[in-house]
Image 1: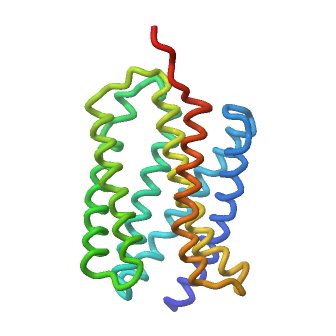
Image 2: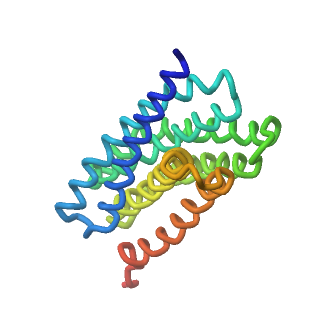
Length: 228
């Protein structure tokens, strides 16, 4: 029964992930603020929210059998939920920094810190495979917390702060979307590919692409303003 439930959840997860992947790239390649961009975003957000909700019972099934993997996946859920919330609220609260950095923002930052510390501990003392990947990903949660605390304590002077928050959060969402696709969806679509290669690519490629995309987006949409 549990196996059937898990396989059903995986199929739903893959389907929602495909919708999220398509809408993510539609939004990413369309003109920012255009009707297509906004429509793709309205599709992407609920698809990802449903995907995360469906992933919770999947993690609950995995956790007792494989605590390291289950704990790591639970941590990824927290990171992705944080990025998804930030990408949504940064646009909705773009004229209200105080509201944006309210209790939900701070609570998610603390959740990222605690989950990140737990994952680093798992990677250092309990993981038998991919230790460096687990530890490095755990550090991301700590960095998210530090940046969030700094942002809360120092009100932004640039009115485009919301755009920066939105772009960075969407890059985080992009990493999560592509990790899921490369690690879960693609092996089922192309079973002839080497699974070890796909697992490695699932972690390395999305991060590398996100870093490059982040630099390009910052130069295009957030160029330094000339000094007065």
